[in-house]
Image 1 (spheres, rainbow, N blue to C red):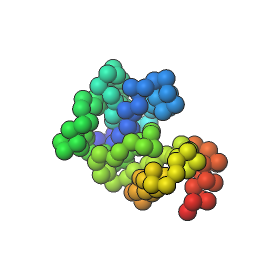
Image 2: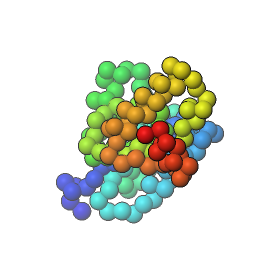
Image 3: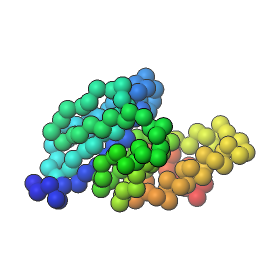
Image 4: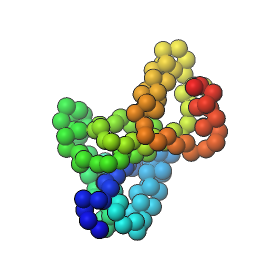
Length: 150
């Protein structure tokens, strides 16, 4: 397929640094699943923690994150992509891309936080909702909770 027509998708798998946590497990499953997808015309860029080995696949390019703390320059080191998908709803978007897929896993903070902290979480989620091209949820329950607060 012509590379000009190929869609580049960045999947933020930085939670692979915590393989025993929920988001870490999700990242592991995503990394395996997308690496084996035989879809012509799609190429995946995996944003990986520096401590994680590169993933080798025909349709995957690994991008190791050496130091996210250099926020001023970090976005410029990332590839330009057509779609950005963050596995973790709390990860920061580092580069504007034409399309952003936002997956909401839970809204536990609504029940665990109060006052200012709760408002800050709501604002962060709302900012990502506003930027998102597509919003997905992991369950009907989460989708229903979102409808309640909107």
